[in-house]
Image (cartoon, rainbow, N blue to C red; front, side, top):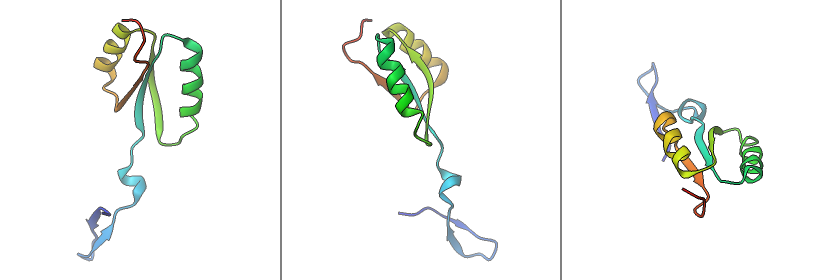
Length: 81
């Protein structure tokens, strides 16, 4: 479904996509810095993704999530706490 807005003429018109899309804010969490760096390099090539933080352990992830409120946390599930 396409979102609409009311034009000055009173007619409904489709909203421009650039007005409604915001970058996806991501925190990367992995205890291997080379893995984080590689994933960050790939994500930074995407125009609608913004890496806002990196963490090397679980405690650091929790602190970053509280501080930045990301949309997504991409985390290694076998990482140390």
